Image (tube, rainbow, N blue to C red; front, side, top):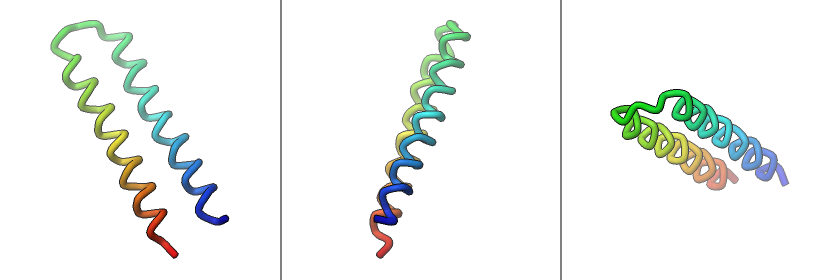
Length: 59
């Protein structure tokens, strides 16, 4: 029961990070920034995956 709020909070935090990256991407339409945008999204998702994995392993 204690793990669920942590996982939900982690998901919301990851979504906020991804939304910020996407919003920046919409404002900057230059081609050279596209790679950085996708890289930032990947890092945000990877951070969330690490967070959930570590939270799930705590007993």
